[in-house]
Image: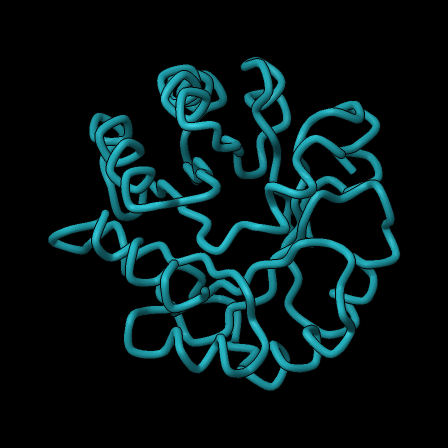
Length: 215
């Protein structure tokens, strides 16, 4: 695990994603400053369909903003783009490069996260030891962001919480201001919200409210 980030991720309560499905890249810098002002603890770039060169361009614009705030910047599923920008981490899914292979390429210092969609996958993540920095569980609720994945429900959140994970973990998928308290009650301690934030009239206030709900 990237030891320098472990405590930071343990203390994290809100993970922001800048997603090209909901926001235009020319607004990413402004959005990054906005979600950071609201208290985002992590920022990820997710740009499905973009080229590696485009992702590198956007990451380079975001990197100094996140660095100034002391917040990790992560690239979704593009090792080459992540490596092109100093200190950028990587998030992979179940069908992407395996975490062990990713860690071998990334080296020991960068953040590495993994998506999980079942208790078995979460347990497997916990067995990866120092390979992973964190993992995510979801989608907790139905979400247009991941239409091909069935919602895993709050029961899985509770089951993962009962494992007392040594890795920091985040609940993701369909989480909004109306249901975030249910996630907290089920045992979640940190959340990711995409459309709820990026489509909000006041993204900073939305982040602030979600983060406070998890505290």
